[in-house]
Length: 103
Image (cartoon, rainbow, N blue to C red; front, side, top):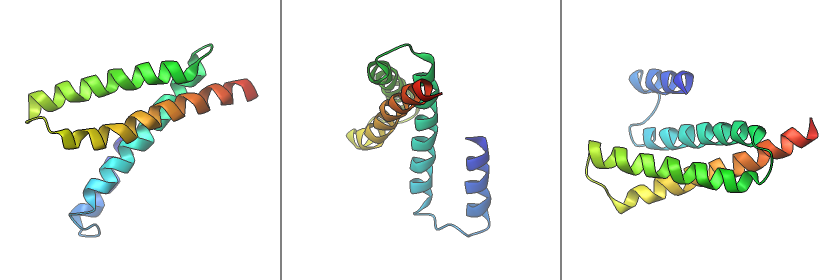
C-alpha cells in the first residue's frame, strides 16, 4: 500500500499522471489491497471463507462510512466505491481458502 501510494504520488508530482486519473489509481490500489487482505483472511479461516469475507467486508464498509461521516459529508456515491472493495474482499477470501487446500 505504501509503495503504490508513493509511486502514484511520485508520478502525479512529476506530471506523468493526469489529475482526473488519480481517482482510478486510488480505486485500483484499494481493490488490490482488499483482495490481498481477503486472501490472507481466507488462508486463516477453517471453512466458509465467503461468509467470513462477507462479514469482514461489512465491517470494512461500516468503518469507511463512519470515517466518511467524520471527515466529510456522507454521499450515496460512496457506495459505488464500497461495493467493488467489498466484492474484492469476498473474492479474496474465497481464493485464499482454495489456496490453502491446494498447498
